[in-house]
Amino acid sequence: MKSEVKNCGLTKYLFIGRKKYNLSTVIFVVSYFAYLVCAIFSQTEFENTYDATIINLIQLLAIFLVVVKFFVDETLNVKNLCIWILIILLSLIVSYKTTNVTIVIPIAAYILCGSNVDDKIIIKTSFIAITTMIVITVFSSVIGIIPFKYTVQTGGRLRYALGFVYTTFLANYFFHAILMWLFLKRRCPTLFESFLILILNFIIYYLTDTRAVFYETIVLVAVCWIFKAVRHLNRNKLRYLFLIAFIGCAAIALYIQIFYDPSVVWMKKLNSLLTSRLHFGHKAFVEYGLSFFGQQITWVSFGASGNYFYVDSSYMNLAVNYGIILLGILLIGFTFLMNKYIKANKLYCCIALAFLALHSITDPQLFSIICNPFLVLLGGFIPLSPKFYFKRSKALPKLTANKNALQ
Image 1 (cartoon, rainbow, N blue to C red):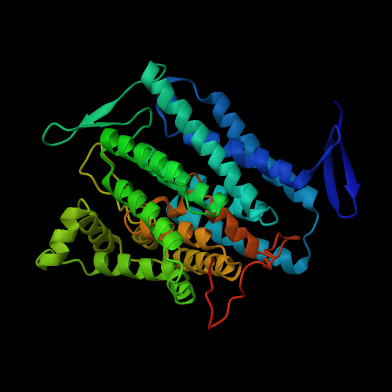
Image 2: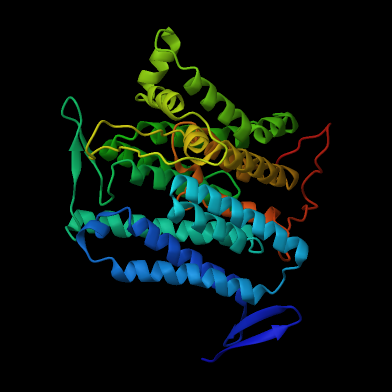
């Protein structure tokens, strides 16, 4: 079997046998998949049990392939180069202010790198990487290849990490994998698929005691079935709810944490229900305030020395740690992304994004390229090279003010 690279106009293709692949896309998939696997590896007991030198080298190679893809594309002009410079400059400033170079730079790199890659390919690559690592990690933990650790809660309840360094990681990986699956399938789960999702959800909840994800997954499946069953629902009005999902959820999250007052009964009860998330969000706001480009904060997680201090809400975490400029850009970007799928009549893509917005009120994965590949889709709004655009299906109604908008 021979492989070779050929130029076809402005596009380079990789020929393997009789099959033709876009070289730029191949480089992205290899780089992105390798980076994700290595990043997830660092959040498992593999990192603490075995030498990670090879994994670190592979991760560096993955980032190097991003540079290679840049030269393969050959599509920059002066206007686009200015946009590149602005994005890179913002990334460097936030990285410097927060000292989170290994978090910010890879996210910016893959947003730029994925600007001309099909949305489905990006999400599918992430879905395969995350599900593969879930299976490998859990299986390795169960059979003893890596430690089978657990923590003991007040009252004696055991929480199993199942191979990950913290007990909530598996549940959050699972939830985001469901969102990716829904985005890719673009339909309501079948009865069997729904049953399987809910059974796995219950097993993970029983072993890890991660309540937020447990309830969110149940509601997600229920919402999908409601949209399938209630066909006369005026979906055109719902497009506005989808459109404001990220900005609305961010406003709610910031309000209840900034103005949190334990003397207010409903706030105190909500804080208890959310395991002190409002308290820690308010504490971070009082002690650090909001900055434009972020600031260095030393978070103290469970198991570390010192009193626990971490902000789980993505919106408050971004506002305090990474700055309101970056938070604002992300909210605008995700709103544009939601609008893209509203116009394309992709209902279940909108549902997946809406639940990402909802989940981000209480959990910190919105700015995590490992859990949230939808970050990479924001690159589609950067005019760097030819992009994939949705074509409206003739079988679906047009988006109008008087007819159903989403199918």
